[in-house]
Structure formats: C-alpha cells, structure tokens
Amino acid sequence: METTVVGFAESNGDGYTMVVEYHAGWRSCSYGEKTCWYVDPSHYELVQQAKAKPPTTKYPDGNPKTAMGLAKPNYRCVPMTAVYAMGKVMTGGAIKYGPFNWRKDKITSSTYIDAARRHLDALADGTRIDPESGEPQEAHIMSCMALMLDARLCDKLIDDLPAEPGPMAKYLAYNTIKKAA
Image (tube, rainbow, N blue to C red; front, side):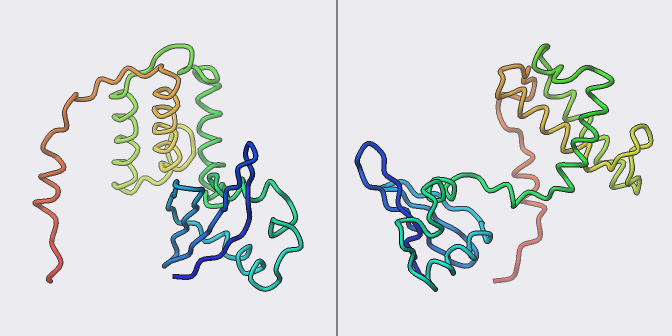
C-alpha cells in the first residue's frame, strides 16, 4: 500500500499530519489517532500532483484549507442529476405543503416509508415517471428519505417503527443464494 503525505494542519500549535492512503479505490485520512475510510477517487489527481512536484509550501496546492477540506465529505461524489431531480420534487412539495413543513410539524416514519414504497413499487412495475408530478420515481423515493433524515436530525420525526428489529434480515440472509466456496 502506498502512502503519500499531502498536507498538514495545525491546531493550537500541535502539528497533525494528514496522511492519505489509497488501496483498491479506498481513501483513508489519518489525523493523529483518528482514521476514516471511504471511497474517494476524486483526490487521486491531487496526490499525483503532490508526487510529481513536491510543494513549495506545506500544502500541495499552496492553500492551507486544502488539508482540512480533504477530510470532509466530497460533494463531487454525489450525482448532480439526482440532486436536481430531488430538488424539483421538493419544490413541488413546498408549493403543495409549504417549504420545510416537516421542521414545523412532526412527521411520522411510516407515512414516508409507505410513500417511498409506493414510488418504488410503481417503478418496479414499469412506471418510471410519477403521473402527478411528472418527475422520476427515484426522485420521490430520495425525497421521502431526505425528509425522514432531516426530520430525525431536527427532532421532528415520530418514529413509529418497531423498537426491535424483526426477522427480515435473517429471512433475507436465509433466502439469499450463497456463492460456492
């Protein structure tokens, strides 16, 4: 496994070395004792630049924000078509129900899971575009999940799901074809 130092960050006079490791498409950022792993091929070019020409400063591009920015979620990994489509569905919802209405009044998990399932079932049955909104079913499914996540983080979600996991995970595992060893 190849390791490349691509930058440093200083906090309260303590020096933290940011080490980026690439292994089979995975990226690891290490700050002291903390390490996080995630798929991030977009930083490959930055590492290649750092290898090709040692930087004249502590940062590969001369910008001290780079070292900190590399450790944060990378929005370039999110397909903008999905964000745009979800935005269109969310705009329709804002017109119909009011913008960010789920932050004013609590919402219930099962309502949005059922809505997402209806859109998923319609998609699985061949209806790719929602007839009411004219938008892709996938955008409606993502919107339902986004609302639930945001409501949960804003403490506006009534979680009426079972308190304990049911048998579904075991049932799926039992009914999944295993690869031959």
